Structure formats: structure tokens, C-alpha cells
Length: 469
Image (cartoon, rainbow, N blue to C red; front, side, top):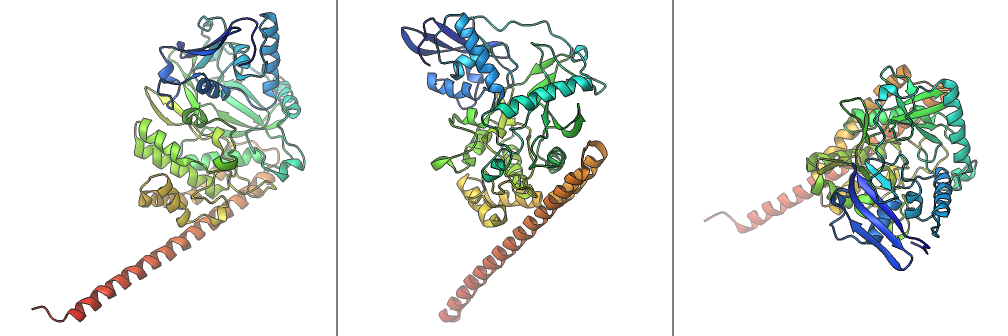
């Protein structure tokens, strides 16, 4: 954790109950002190975790993109003010310096050994409204910060290598009041929507395509964040409802505990797999659902359905950071999918970040790859093929229905871009379905041939044996 000239404690709370403390002292190595709610922090923890496991978990609470720069600056200023000599970019120090920020889910931080200050609850109906002019200023600032970020690809460079389609876009948090008007919670209040700006010239119509894809997967049985395309403050945006928020009986917004797949699995590293860890490791997701979901079989089927939709839509950018789990009364379920889009019809890489059955090229994925996927994840092969077949048969109509809904409910600055890309996605779905059907037919014919050969062998053996005595 670096060198410290004064003690530093980072206290972590889940729903206001102490979960753990990371204690740093100039004369001692860093220590982890468990709290009463530590077992509820992650499904991947057994209670014997060390400081390094906690550091890995906390690292994934940090914001990404250019937003991290502001967090680091504030942390550095507070470290200086408290005469603590620590590396300002370490996860612990960034979190310590931003203990009152709006974090994911029900996780909250405190840097003074006391629970986070509980601000007076404010009902959503009392959040200050945001005018369209105010919205334009907020989004302009977000665009400026994102473009200044070191990990943002622009221009032709974004098309030469893997670049995030949705997650890297400029974004802000907002809420909507009962009448649908936009509003913004004051510091200490939780917001309920994420607003992302369509800001890449290589992805025209992206907001509309994402809205359609999100609606389509919802229609085939995958829980998906409520998403729509909107023109706000002069910007084309896509807005998604947060899954880690819920309205209380008094109208106040409450947090829901959610953790990323990487946190639940105890993985380090980035959201994109590299090197020997480049295989998706889907088995871990199924294991978590089998062990911790309230209805394991249904939860596993939903995840299989999500993977099938990813393949069919050409959603190349599904990565570890887009998968998570919602904690509910000691059990978990898959967090609603978000950022689901398609790279079909764009200049972006079409290969899947995380493939199926060892294959990342969508046009090469068929029944054989899904069988391999089932075997590698210890799943019933026929059940997996059944879920995939149901999804394949349902998605074309679901995508068509989602396009109709989008044209009625969404707002597009340039509708032809959305239509053009959606036509290509619809064709991609049809081609994948036809390829899968041919593969199933070939496997069926092969199995029938093997069965006929076995039957002929038994008949020949009976003939050679002569008539029964």
C-alpha cells in the first residue's frame, strides 16, 4: 500500500453495516480487519481472505475512463492535508479520499473510523429538476472529461484494435421524477439512471441500436436494464436504468448490493481477458449461480440465453466488467444486462471478446461449439442446446418487435443510421440461425447413421447365430 507517514484506515460498509477495514500504519504492514457484514460483501469470499483479496475487490470499485483523474486529484489533496504520504493512485487511497462519492450498489466508504454520515433522506420527488440547457452543460463536461482520458480511443485508432463500444462513452448519473422529467440528486442522494453520449464517429446510430438490442434480449427472457435513445441538451444519448437502485416506501432511493463477476470470482486484471486467461471461464459463472442463486437451473438457463443473444446479435464487446450479480436476502441473481449492442455494420472488430466453446468468430459458432461449452461448464448438453434453440427461434421476431418499439418511443437525430445498422443486425441473426439449423441437421443425420450401423451390426450378429433353440 505504499509508504505512510501517518496511519490511514479505510472502512467499508454494506447497507451501513461495517464489513471490513483496511488499516495502514507507518511502522506495520497493512492489515485487514473483518466486520460483521463481511460475509455479505462477496459470494467469492469464505471468511479467510487476506489484505490482497480485499485490495483486488476494492480496485474494481474504482471508476473507469477519465473520471478517475478527478478522483485521484481529490485523494491526493486529502492525503496532503492529512499529512499522509501514500501513492495517490493506489485503490485504497483513491477510495479513502472519495469516501462520500456515489459508489456502485450498497457499498459505502468512510475514512475516519466512523460510519458514513447519513444525510437526511430526500424523496426522489424533491430532487432538483434539470433543464435542457443544464443537461447540455453536464453532457459537454462529460464529453470533455472522456476525451481527455488516457484510455479513450478516437479516430482511426479505435478501429485498429479492440475498443469498447459502449462502456467508454461519456456518461453522467441522473434521475427521473414521477412525471418523467429529469432531475439530479444532491450530494448524498442516489441517482437512478446512467446517461451516455453517442460520441464516436465510427458508431453512427449507436444509441438507437443499443436501445433495440436491449429491448430484444428482454423479449426473449434475459433480464435487461430499461434502455432508450434520447436527444438531451443537443446530444444524442442512450439512457439506462440502474439495477442497483430501488425506491423505498417513503420515496427515497435505496442502494442494492451488486458486485462484478471479477469481484465475485476473486479475479484480478482488467475487464478484457489476456494471455493464458483469454478463455472466458464461463464455468465460474455457472458455479456461482448453482451455489448461490435462489433458482439455480433457471439462473443458469438465463445466462446461457444471454450468451446466445450475444452471439446472435454480434455483440462483440461483452466483457467481464459487464457481468455482475445482484445480492438479495443472502442469494444472488444475474444483474440485468446493459451495454448490449452490436458491432455488425461497423468498422469495429467483429470477433467476440469472450467466445463460446473455444470459438470467438460468430459465423463459426454452431451446435458443436455449444456442446463443447456445455461439457466445459459441466452442464447438461441437451438442455443447453434446447435453450439456445429456443433463443434462436425467438430472437428474430423479438428484434423486429424491438425495432418497432424503438421507432415509436426512441428519439433519433439521424434515424437512417439506426435503420441501416439494424437491418444488418437482423440479417446477421438470420444467417446465424440458418447456420445453426444446418449444423443440427448434420449432427442428426450423423447420429441416425451411427444408429443404423449399430442396428445392422446387431441384426447381422443374430443372423450368424442361427435360429434360436
